[in-house]
Image (cartoon, rainbow, N blue to C red; front, side):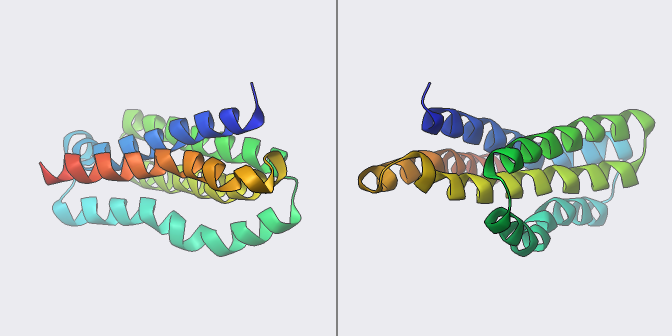
Length: 152
């Protein structure tokens, strides 16, 4: 399987998991923790803050690091974050739940930045636009799906 197909497949998985977390966060917080609307807003902000806080430092890391290693690390960070959200729910720890959601968000951010840096290395200049469209399509689908599910 070509590297670009693997990267696009990973993008689907990563963005789908991130969207599931975003959509399910209010339900889990309300049902598992009896969270108030304010607390649900704080938890959503925790997940979104990873994008704000991680972009610049991760961009520097991507510019200087081994992209393959960073891609694997991003998947591990996201996976640990998602698993730890389950642990937070089981233990009844709202703090662990919020921190884990933030950690998972950091993994998603690192993946997004790393995957964009990998593109020019795995496809030729004549195919970079099509490859970028393929890589960004999963993110667009999850954003549209998330918007639609919150709007209904």
